[in-house]
Image (cartoon, rainbow, N blue to C red; front, side):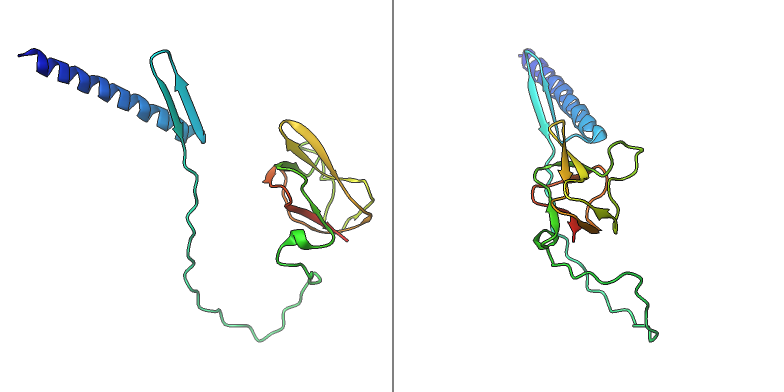
Length: 165
């Protein structure tokens, strides 16, 4: 009859060891900023995955700040941009999901700047997708009105990158 407590104590030790191992793996997942971690041996297979959902945040109403009586000078002309920049007729949209680069090398100057003139076929950005660098070129000659992306920013298919008018 004395064997029953020993077996349950042994199971408790094994469960405790397994739980601490899973906790260590979870800590590695958090510290490395990983979305998923898999560990597999002949005896055990463990897969940890981070749930990345964002809950909508309700903004608290803010009282309007008093308006100054003096007129404010506007340095830049106001752009008449639609609510969705991708709907603008001069928008150059991303043809793929990837990472956009604004320069050919990390220390090199950007391909374009706002207000710069571009020619048809000129490289505006490079999009890295699946370790392949894809140039994004100007569809027409014009002037760069607005750049919507920053260097090394992840982008989605159809996202407006720049407006060329």
